Image (cartoon, rainbow, N blue to C red):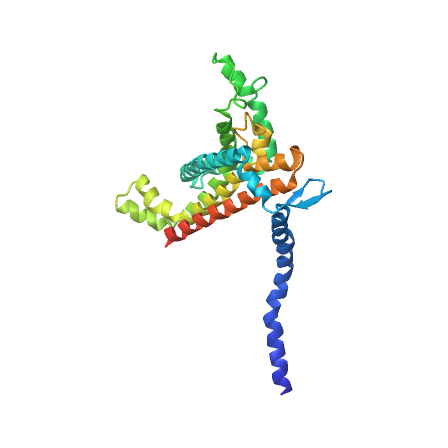
Amino acid sequence: MDATVKVRSFNRHRSLAPYFFLLPAAALILMFNIFPLLMSFVISTLDMQISFSSAKFIGLKNYIDALADRRFINSIGVTLKFTLLELPVQTILGLFLSALLAKNTTSNKILRSVYFLPIICSATAIGIMWNMILHSNIGLITYWIRSAGFGRVNFLNTPTLALYVVLFVTVWRTFGISIIILVASMQNVPGDYYQAADIDGAGKIRQFFFITLPSVMPAFWFLLMTRAIGSLQIFDIVYTLTGGGPNFTTETLVTYVYRKAVAMGGNMGYATAISEFLFVFIMFITFIQYRIMTKTEQ
């Protein structure tokens, strides 16, 4: 009888052992992810300044005010436009260059390293660097354009150009990680597939569309989801490159959240309510992409 009880006690403790190992990680997730997320919903219902000196419960007023805020609506439009432009450029450019750099030749390895270098640099430093290069007075590129006789071009303060400059700098900085992910996926495609395609007379273009592209779709969907989230949260390059101008044509949602929370009187409650809209929107976009990815794989 005592032996049976001891065996049951031992089995019970052994079944609980994995949960004890998971407890530190679960505690960290609860402390730094779940709890701040719940607190953000609480703060969004308050009229509270950045100093936390006073807080007054106002319910859903911040959300109602946000829906009537023209700058908030404009920032949503700018963010969506930037995302819809950045994703196709990022993915198509990544696929094209990855197909060219997939073979492990010495030149390809060097080029992959060169393309990856910007991603290890600070986005703030990248934004400041390109701000100096494209500056209308001291910029190197604008100097070359003037020297060629095309006159002065103000890339960063022209409303029709500024967002495309931000797009260019963002893609220039981040497409290196797209290449690394897609190249790694392409190198895992069995070589037998290509040998069979060669025997059947399929050219390189048909091999890319019917062998390479279907094989890298899981990595492609992962890249698409992560880049969509990154594009919707774009801040540092915009803030250091254009500051949201000119005339709010590059003011993204996160940039506006920062301005409301810090620069424009520090209205933390209102800024947090705006960020909740972004949270819900990212969740919705991620869910839609996940559903499409699942159906595509099936």
